[in-house]
Length: 395
Image (cartoon, rainbow, N blue to C red):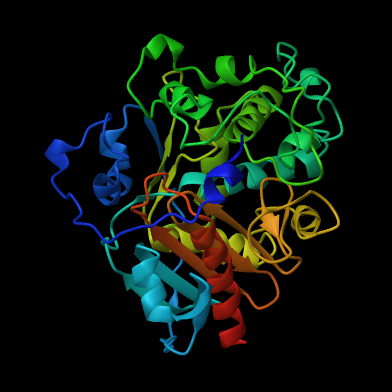
């Protein structure tokens, strides 16, 4: 069962009192609806294993400021065209920022401070896209090869599976991410990842993902079968190919090239392996700086080529990948979604990165939903639609 099962329900996300008493929030209850806002802004202090991603020595890339009134923008949400300001409230937005070129045209810290680092959840998957693109384009990794050529010990879940299929979420695994099912494997996976209490000796992502078995009853039909272990297995492949930790690669090759204003962090397991599927923790402005790489087709603001242009072009090709179940005409390809113009990714709970490769518009959002499963089809579609709507409004 994939994330699509959870998102297929339109859950109520009531406006509840938020618990800001950090002393009452623990690893056992950090993801309860009332606790999420504090937890997502204090993940580094809350979770047992995180790795600092140092910003490096480059000068901070400064944004210009050209405020624009986005009040006329509407978004398709809850079966109607919802005004922009109402959307921010109803999507439980913590922070929202829009870039046009290098200028901040809108910035709103509704339920966070500018200095807060916020958990990105699955927006983090884009970091795998960024790193693996360089390995593919340099010939260090061949996505047409089978997974076992890089990790021989994989069980039946990944045996005979191309790396490209893992990149495109096109693998049938005996693994459920149905958060409405207390027996779903995702709950054990959270313990393995250090996101829930458990035996540290078992908190080993590589050992877990390589042991997942094939699901013969699941039929792949070209639709995205979105599962977090795919991303984390790609992190393991990257480490095998390079001989380096993923966190070090991301720090050196990506994060220290964007002119970030502050250090970021990455969640890891007890062994130090990055939770590539959802572990990036970053400031809102630094997420926008990172997103600029995709809007600028792989080039940092100072002109440094960071991601190969050939890889960005590949990610924009909607004739490839799997049919994504959110947004209009989006494909899931190389741990990224695209409609042929924009590149983007969502994260459970209302996180979003949107980068328009033609207009240069970047939209990033942090949120903490109050719905029980922390996921909602309406919210997911609205996040894609607000990126499109803002980009079109600024055109």
